[in-house]
Amino acid sequence: MSSDFSRCLSLLRQEKGVSQRAVAKELGISQALLSHYENGVREPGLAFVIKACNYYNVSADFLLGRTLSRDGTTIAAEELYDYSAEKDNVLHGSILATLNKKLLVNSTGVLFDLLGKTGKKEAINAAADFLGTAIYKMFRHLYRADGTQNEDFFSVSAREFTAGVPTADMICAESDYVQALADCVKDKGTLPPMNNDALSQNYPGLYQSLLQIIHNTGERINRRVEARRQER
Image 1 (cartoon, rainbow, N blue to C red):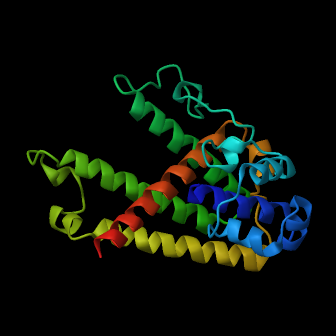
Image 2 (cartoon, rainbow, N blue to C red):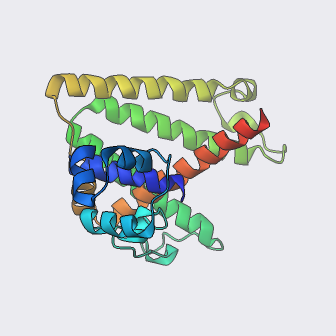
Image 3 (cartoon, rainbow, N blue to C red):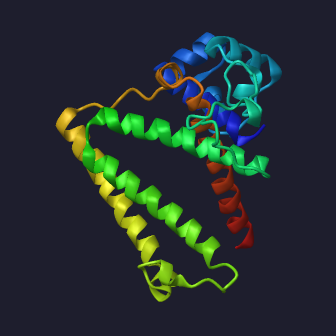
């Protein structure tokens, strides 16, 4: 089984707020064996998967990482709710571009709504700075790709751009963001609820996009990490 299974099994238990001992008792196995399943040390049989699905009220496909929907349903690109949907807001000629735009716009909507609920303007501004610079970098790389464009269009010189100044700006923005969130927790003690039930209830449609971003990014990062390990 994939690492998605062990990770999902552990996260479901933590989300439920119960100990390994309690869950193991409910599922009829030892705590040690459950720990092995959650850490990917051992693979369970079909009987355990069925029991776990019933206990956590999720589908086998969700537990195995085959879908991001708990009931096992899948959502096609054209079914994704578009938070920024407008009459003329269509990217012609590329289904992939439209899908990725939807995923990012929807997920950004969730992010900034949650940040708005914190009331921490420093965190909101830092998040906007970080994402704004990321878009700036992607557009500028596209703009200069054929080497014929006049880069006087940009106030940051070509030399500073290639030297990584925008990347340094993103690192600073991320640092400001983390600090602002830490200050928010220190001042208020709590953040908006972000468990699965709260997010799916507060952001129906949008939350599916955020889950897809989290899943895709995690898989991509893990593949790169594994590839580098194999190169050593």
